[in-house]
Image 1 (cartoon, rainbow, N blue to C red):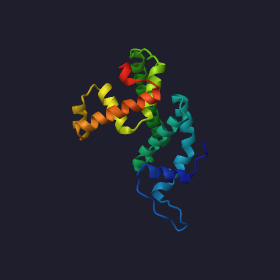
Image 2 (spheres, rainbow, N blue to C red):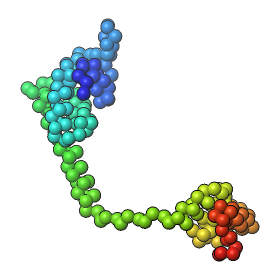
Image 3 (tube, rainbow, N blue to C red):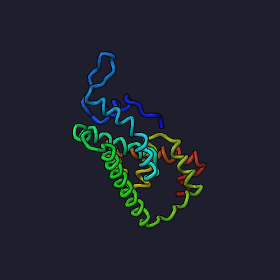
Amino acid sequence: MAHPTPTRGVRLARLCDADPPAATAGGSPRTDRHADFDEFYAANVRALTGQVYAYTGDFAEAEDLVAEAFCRALARWKQVRGYEHPVAWVRHVAWNLATSHLRRRTVAQRFLRRQREVPAAEGPDGDRVDLVKALAGIGDRHRKALILRYMAQMTAAEIAAQEGVAEATVRSWLTRGKKAVAERLHFDFERDL
């Protein structure tokens, strides 16, 4: 983790939707309101992140949780900076956030463990693979007509109504589609069906 700097506190203030700091004479976007927060943030963010990381075991999550705790501190900065140990308040918030996160993770893991195991599906046989390849090699209309007719068990009239075409057009698509698939499979549909 990079060493935090006071400007990171300003960026955190922006992330926390705090009032945008006004530019000073040197062009630095700081205000007195945020200056002491920047210093507080820079002095404590690394140690708090390390502590929460040790608790959660996930560095990215620790960074997020500590950032959220600092955002909450910034939103109440007038009050928090008056505390005897403001860092203790931020640590407490970060720790509570981490505990909530760990509880949610534990509940999710417990739920997943209780789910019945779904048996693995067998892979497709060679004929099915060949059919899928053959269907992929024909025109969209013909492929759709064949799938609707033979897999969805729709009649030519139902397909025609769905596609907004004449029933004769659907019969033509089916005939041409079957012929194209048969050529790709080297199969005589009329003889073998």
